[in-house]
Length: 134
Image (cartoon, rainbow, N blue to C red):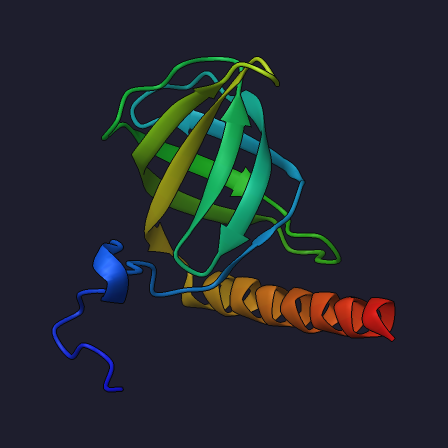
């Protein structure tokens, strides 16, 4: 059976739209609204080369532009990125807001480091899964 070539998905499901793989990862993220000077703290939920999902105590509007500062696990380098909120929802169980943020400006070296981190995590998780099934 051939895969659809127009970007649509089989079985009526929405097509997968991300360019980059994401992995669950928790680390502190400092953020501020563009043009504002008050920095607040959030917690990442996942990350990939194209963006990050951040949990916060405040509801932020779709389309808001944020300046982000964070360190991915096992990295010495503080990364600075600009991103736009493309998805927001409230998680009642955790009583926090989650914001999907697409990077609009990030140093290519930082993006490469994130991609390497994600690849390492995917490999680690695959090995753990393989070991668990033995």
